[in-house]
Length: 271
Image 1 (cartoon, rainbow, N blue to C red):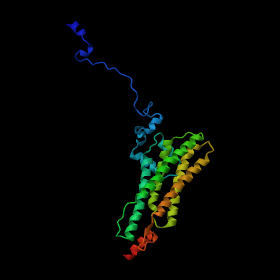
Image 2 (tube, rainbow, N blue to C red):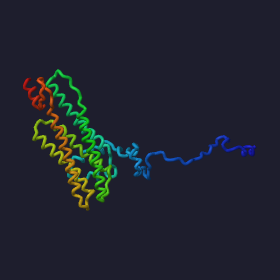
Image 3 (cartoon, rainbow, N blue to C red):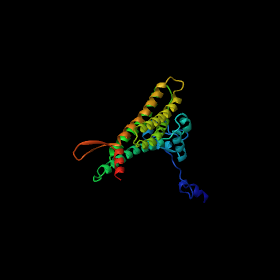
Image 4 (spheres, rainbow, N blue to C red):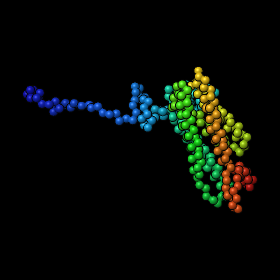
């Protein structure tokens, strides 16, 4: 009886598990992984969304800590704070917040302008403010850190583009706060605010870049970073200053430039 079972194939025996033949398959992933789960430096990974997941692996406490660190321009220890965990969360959300703040303030100005000058006309959202702000902010925060990465690499110092994007992204946080203050109808006060905020943001960027150029005569790199960051703040000041000044067509067909604060004061006097 036992001999009859031995003559049967093993795959037909009760309780037996068929053998599995493992064949080599091509790796269909767009990015290779090395030991530790970190993606390797493969150009294919640039076009794979999953390769960026690790740069969004941050919680609220980490983000708040880095936002507060960006408000300390003279510390110069931001890269030591992020250690080996740079994130792109701040880059995306801080810059996006700045874009929508600029666009929202611009449309708020046109809304009040329309209601105070001629309440009978219908107001519509001006998408041009959003386009302008997006081109300015996203273009700066993506291209400038990338340019400094290639420049520092070319000059012989090691750099990390993700760490640069992280630092530049958080450097815009102070400009988000400052944008709201640009609606103050006092020109000298607006200039003081934007110069202080722009100078603080520029110091934050240049002093943190200093750790990458120590030991090399690359002071010009720090000066360039300072000037570009301050230039961004002045561009925001320029566009924000134009917001209270809107052009509209009067009843006689003439184009008039009018200040929003003057309309507000006139409306208050009528009351």
